Length: 524
Image 1 (tube, helix red, strand yellow):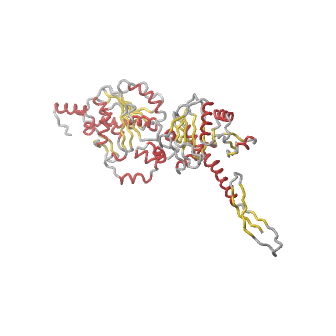
Image 2 (cartoon, rainbow, N blue to C red):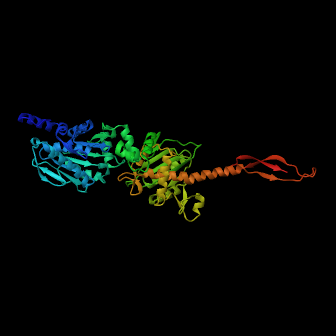
Image 3 (tube, helix red, strand yellow):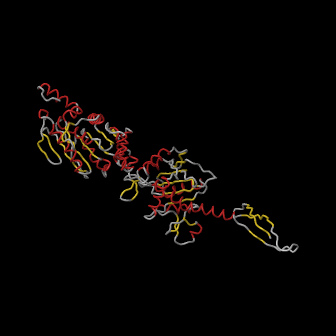
């Protein structure tokens, strides 16, 4: 662009730049290049589309791969906003003040690099983390403290790397009123798993639930990147890093207990239940009782008036197919009755109740109602003990004890069953809980404001299936094999013939179940 323009041309050029931020950035904004110094910022097509969206929509949320120049693009847009508009108040927020300040630094550099004839306003206050113009517009960088930006009346709020901001939900609740006078918002980030506020805002934007315009920018939107570039980049990267930094994948990018690929496989296999029944129609059934199969039931009770849910998981013992599931809030006595009804429905299924404080009350109710197939275990080793023996033996407990010692074991077993495809999960309620069940400070737990009741019941089911029920099945097979191998020998003296003669005959025995077994033995 030549700068040898007359007044009429200059005015027309200023008006054109004021109307079109893409034109302004492409022709007058400069950025710092690490090798080439200060160079013109020529937007790529996907960056131009982003700038147009920033101008057109009040709220924009950007799910992006790394190193796409989006922060610089936002800086160019802020420069245009401050230069051509009066009394604009822009706040840039990030987890670290240095990150937010770096974006403000780019705005300041772009502002100072425009030609003199275009500098229709000047910087009058210049600080490290902020600056103000003589047209009343200003921009400043702040970190994500508890009261960040709450006293401001904002024209534009930019939140950078939003997925890693702790407590973004509370922060957003405080910041949203500052935009009520017509302010805009740009939220941008690479993904960091599911269940966080960034994931919630973006997925709701895709569904049209909130006011945000969703913008997704995976690695290949950049015209200078191809498959060879991608293959080279991922050589030294972990799977979660690839998902986070390049693929814009929420499911595979988080530190979830279940691997992202396994989560995707679970969601593909989920299906609508054949029946929805129960007191509140929250009992979902996929597999009806089959007399040729055996089943077991795990219950995780909760108070009927709290934030947690009472849950039931019923599994086919042999196939580990999820046969039925309940999630709801019921009084203790009604929940106990529901457990008993469906334990009997599935062939008097072995019933394992988590024996927390509420669970003990449920167990007592089940015993009063005459349930005869409750799970008992040794208090110290957690090994299963026959109910009749346990009632007369000290150191035993009815139900499963979910403690600091057993919790890591049952969760590890759940992960193992999912990874090795031993378990068949049909419920999307359970799948959604697994999405938000993450590692935090070395402990696997539900993300804040999410539940894990279905997950914990399923984890107990996997542990019971692999320990008590697997052992019971093996012992049954061993006993049967031993009975089948029994032989008996009897010798008698025949005085009519010298010595002994052996004649093979058969004897009929009956086992404990009155099943006839033909066993060979020898008579001498």
